[in-house]
Length: 125
Image 1 (tube, rainbow, N blue to C red):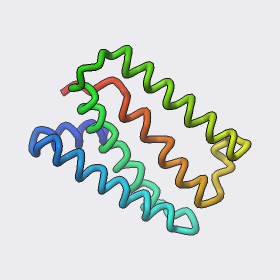
Image 2 (tube, one colour; image 1 turned 120 degrees about the vertical axis):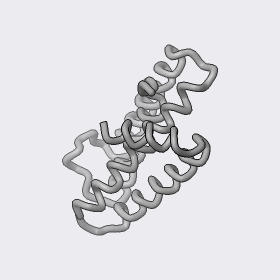
Image 3 (cartoon, rainbow, N blue to C red; image 1 turned 90 degrees about the vertical axis):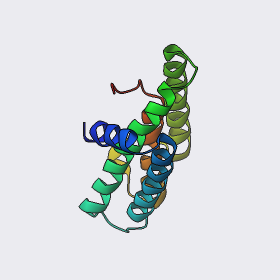
Image 4 (cartoon, helix red, strand yellow; image 1 turned 180 degrees about the vertical axis):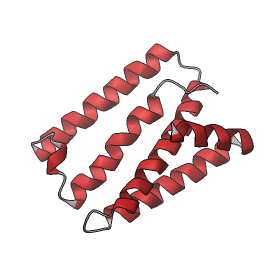
């Protein structure tokens, strides 16, 4: 909800391309802050979560303006998810969220949350 509200506001107030660019930079910044921390720090985690929500929703708006039909985006989303989890399991030998204890797994957790946002159905604007 917060991601949709913030994204809608930014898209209406600023050019869509600028919002996507700034959102990508802000998301990468938040993920770097989170991943470089050796232990769990709540505000760093939630900073990354909120920035992923805003960027993902904004990217979904971009996807909704593309020429591809909805079924194509949904099929692409399913393929991205399947591929990501197959690679994750092949490398880590687990799919448990309770085993995220290394910087590599922490980094992959951040990447795991962004593909569905990019390819999700568009929010109502």
